Image (cartoon, rainbow, N blue to C red; front, side, top):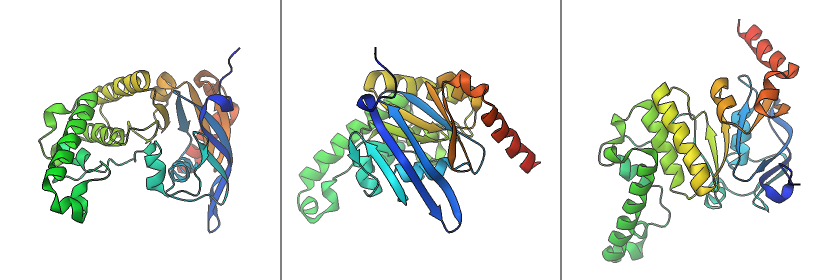
Length: 264
């Protein structure tokens, strides 16, 4: 019988990772595995260590101890851009766009290896034009996936908050990811575009076998889309399981209620 979260089927294996900044320990001895082509949510009160965890997984910060194994390779000492090239790509809470470039140009900027960026490319305009044509073709394909084709030649600055999240997702897709780390993809997005984002993510999972790990505060959305939920508090994992089981976990309830009492 096949079991879930075995190392054989794990795309990501996180082994006892920790990091500290001065006296603050945002991630402490965190371990988990992520099964290929799964949808896992990380939840927890503010200050739980969720974004710090993503910073470690994506290489933005380095672990003090522990290992991060992505597709069988240790990546905890690799630079962030190299990790992205290996297929582990992240988005951020605030969609990072260049407002004065068109929507398509924002995506084309994400393509690696532009020959126009070096002397040989400057001396060979034909190669540069060929590259740009291919980058444009790929950008249009990605925009079609998220429903932004009609905005391709509009300035990115005109997009709504939800549309910018879709643009940020499509730009991440330009890296041809095997796994996506989504940091609050639904924050500040109106319900109609939340439904659009959910539809896009489901299609990507089905058609491209992309694995998703996301941070999200909307528990209703989390429970509806997740195969599994990991709960963090004070830099540690306090619960890990099926969505329904998380609702009934006393440690999770105490963590959220405790956070609300502190804020009150």
